Length: 345
Image (cartoon, rainbow, N blue to C red; front, top):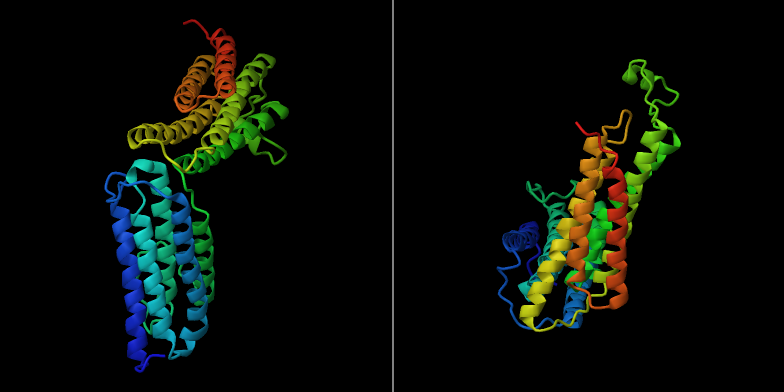
């Protein structure tokens, strides 16, 4: 127990905790995959143990702080100091991650850690006599809710990726979900015949009395586009499963840097695939502009080909390579049918 437990002493330690958390947030936000000081081998198991220990200490002491700080307990400064020690520990562990492991992994570790430190600062801010204005991005909530946010952030930190492949898989899965949403939209359009008016009367007003139903030829064309979109979804799912197997024990650093760049490129291509799918969906309404739709389908197919080419550079399993080749070939076959329906001007 602290000998000096005046309100001023408690306020000082709360401010120290806030300042320390935000200091490391600023440092992490300035870093990128090339600015890390660590260049040695990465021990994933040791990293996991160290980061989890720090998160557990923060979570435990966040609970203690929420119980004692509202009463201005004599133990409040001590708990604040313990949390500061945990913040220093986590910052040191994050600093130890070599930049050569990959940009996506670095980004996940930095953003996840920053979110935790933001929430720690916000929690401590709840107990100051006059709250500070913190640009943390965290919700301005009471201390009980703020404690829950710290718990949740600690859980997320404990589940952080250990490899760039795992981090890339998370990003690709996120984009796959968006592609699935777009596919559902097209399927609903085809099931409803292409009309979007429903029973509320808005469709008639928007269509100004003109039919919005897709013709049989348009439905057939939209169906072929749907095949390409579903192929793109399967492709992204296979990519995620493939790169997720990336082992935490890296090969020689130079080879690992090249693999890291290829993995990071897959994130960009997954984003691009999702965008291309959205562009294609935008043309599936009556009347379908066949030329514009063909161009959009062609761009999506090109992006799928880029995905296949990139992921194949990371794979040596013959069965997996054959799967990606087959997927690419199927996309090209369907695209040929779509391009054949272009209107010659």
